[in-house]
Length: 174
Length: 124
Image 1: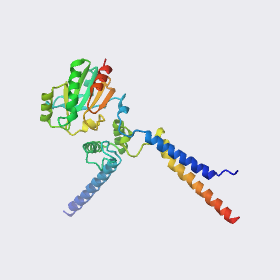
Image 2: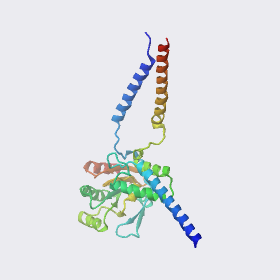
Image 3: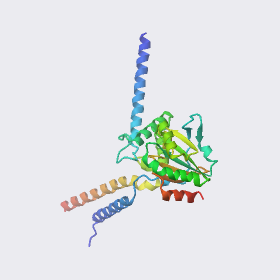
């Protein structure tokens, strides 16, 4: 029996294409921040919301055992939901310090927001145009980044912190 | 006076040319960046908050005289390779780059073999 080489090549090609499509369907194409875990945060400089002459940079974070950088805004509803967990974190553990980055917000609204719900932050930085947040890999708020004293990202939370994430943070900083 | 006018016109034309070049480079970069919060839109097409911020950052980086590749590398380091439409050449996507050429050559070879075979059959 004569083997038709062309048919075999075409058949193999179809099988290969189906395999590639199948693999492609299995792959999750939505944006994931897992690849940032283990990497270091970039250098940054943020001015304080109440005093624009006061700054914080990556160097200051090295003094804290752990730092949680939380991106929030007064207009962000999920930020209100996660706020109680941030307050608990600042109360519960002395190993962690929380920085707030006020994202594309009005200064007065942000101050009112913190007066109303409480202030868990030891420094509130201002990011009026959102440009500083891009260097942290932020694409929406709320988002939080947990870093150690070597500025390595240990955890990145996209969306509001919930009970399970709160417990996970406490475990990570034990 | 005439010389001054000519110098002004030349300077003005060069500025216009430079501005249009910068604009087209900006647009080219925006078009290659994916809006992560939109459905199938590039940064150039999107009016979302995220797209607006990325546009500002790209403008700043260009003003700092960063090259296109440096800008892509910066954004990839923050958001992963998913942010650029055109994938970079690496070991993991070697097949993606080589496969189209391979298929083109093999396909051509198959067509050549088939046509030669049918010609031979007709001649016989």
